Image 1 (cartoon, helix red, strand yellow):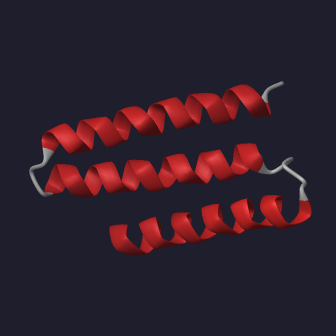
Image 2 (cartoon, helix red, strand yellow; image 1 turned 180 degrees about the vertical axis):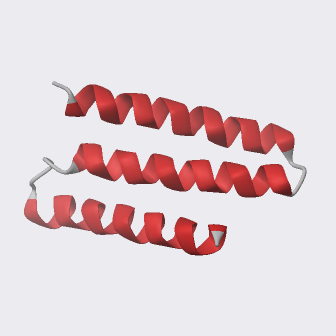
Length: 76
């Protein structure tokens, strides 16, 4: 289940990134960051289940920072 969710978040993130690069329209960048944060969170959960707690905590910290950045941009 987590692999599917991670794959889905990654595909959505790549789609938003490609759209922004090809059209020079970066209005969807906050959504891209939001989905990238979701992918990082899922990866952190997977690493926590594999008993790699240092890497898991780093991924969750990156996720929190990415979510904060995304919400900060969205609320402007």
